[in-house]
Image 1: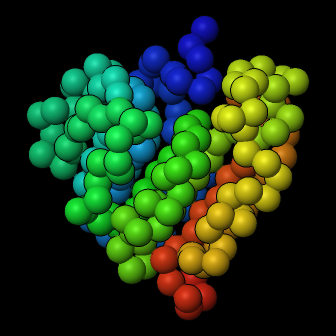
Image 2 (image 1 turned 135 degrees about the vertical axis):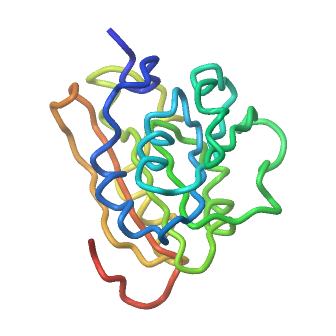
Length: 185
């Protein structure tokens, strides 16, 4: 059975949270898929017409996408050294099943005006249900909301337990780099 937090099959369905808020991304915009894994979100966003930069330490699951002119693949260690995208900006940044708090300020800086941040990862309490269990990889209640609400317009936030696709505690946020109200999808 594939790992929920690092799926090895490209055909695992993309997150409904990501798909729901993809409608806020500028048409034909450029999306950074952080810790892209085997590319389930890269593939879904590309199918919606976005350009995607897929970044991960292991890009072997993305090889079939190298011929797509709308997809750029970068093999980067996101947890050592500096933020590897310091000179680039994006219309959206998607982060799922990955947590490296040091990147929070970089996500804000790397968004274009009206850029969309979509995050979905594990929260405290997940250690009782499965992986990850390490508190370094589990968000505290309200952590995403507190980290981004001052700089971005929060469109939606959730924190709670779910049963499908497996029992987990999840925290989700969608926010836009604007001070104006956002027309919801």
